[in-house]
Amino acid sequence: MLTDSDIVEETAYVVLDLGQEVNAETLRKEVLEHNGISLIGMDSPKPVLRIGNWVFQGEPDIVIGTDLLFKVAAAPQSELVSSSDQSPQSSTDQWKRETPTKAPKIHHIGEVRRIVKFNRVELKRSHQ
Image (tube, rainbow, N blue to C red; front, side, top):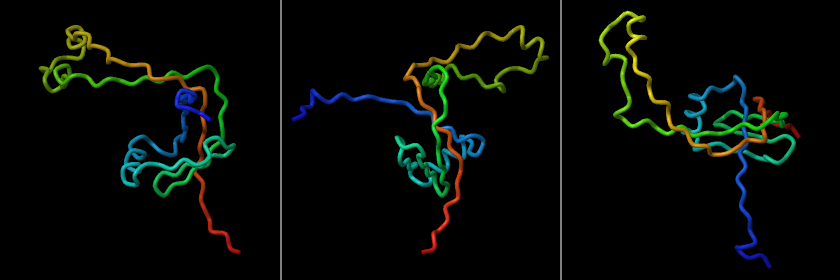
């Protein structure tokens, strides 16, 4: 019989490539309106992804190397500078006077060794 100490938990990150069909803003909107996404058969040769009323069928893609995933930490409010806060200057003067901005802090969260490319498909009722 297995005990809790015998169970090993692993996290695997997979890139779901939707190509040019869906941009990030549309994806966020659909996910919020339809309470997330559905992913069926991720370990099968042809997984299915549903986002709102859209359905996509996927195929594993060849991965060359390893993609690294990072999370960008939000900048503190005090570090954010609006361009309207600066006095109007010529672009050359502004370039000379600009102070370097701090690079955002990033945290490594994982590695991707699998990519699945999805293409949109149309579902049709079968007539029996």
